[in-house]
Every structure is written in structure tokens, then in C-alpha cells.
Length: 161
Image (cartoon, rainbow, N blue to C red; front, top):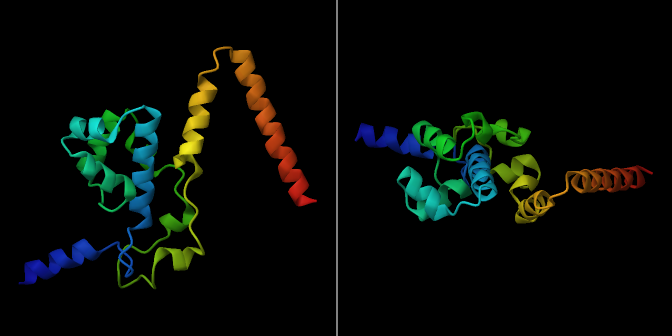
């Protein structure tokens, strides 16, 4: 009976009392999805490469299932990125989230004041990046890049005034 209690505590560790996924698991999953989609790989193909069903890949990408160390290593090899890639650009709120139910004072969203998803994981961003790299002429790409930066900076200046 004691082993079951310990296992139950381990399974619950890292999950806020609301039952929502741990923000670190959500971030890591979003980075898996980002890299998979940038490579043009389906969930099914990724699953086949690491011995999972596409439903299991979906759960990893949503953060519903935590990715173990050996699985993360497999993912890094298949997606051709270092393991650290999955932790890059982690929001401070996710990194500071408690890992034990006893420490959690409620759901992640209550503590963070509203979590904004990573813009790099949005479909719009992925489509924009893919379209950008379909521009064959490097000088045209560079001019578009400079134009985009200028428009973004002018919007920031106007907002500050």
C-alpha cells in the first residue's frame, strides 16, 4: 500500500491542484511541436521514429504527459536539436512554477496573471517563417527583414508616445 501512495505522490508532483499540466511540461511540449512542424514532420511520423502513437505525441505536445529524460533524448536525436533546445525561451513564470502540490497555491494561471503562449509555437509564425524562406533572392529576403524590423520599431515608438 505504501508503494502505491509514493507512486500516487510522484504522479501528482508537478501538477497544480487544478489538474492542469505543469507549465514546464507545456513549454517543453510546445518546443517539440515547434521543431516538428518546422521540419514538416507529422505527429504520426515522429511517433513512428520514437516508438509511440500519434496520440501519445499529441499528449506530449500539449504537456498533458510529462516527457522523461530518455524520451527527451530520443526526441532531440530525431528532431536534430540539442536537449537544451526544449528548455530555450522558457517564460520566467514556467521556470519559477512550484514542482510539488504542497507548494502550489493554486493553478499556474492564477500565479502568473495570465500566461501568454509562446509566439514561436503559433501557426501564424510558422507559416510566416516558411514563406520567408521560400523567397529565393537573399537580397529581397534581407530587405523584407529590414522592413519588418522598421515597421515593428515604429509601432513601438508610437505606443511609447
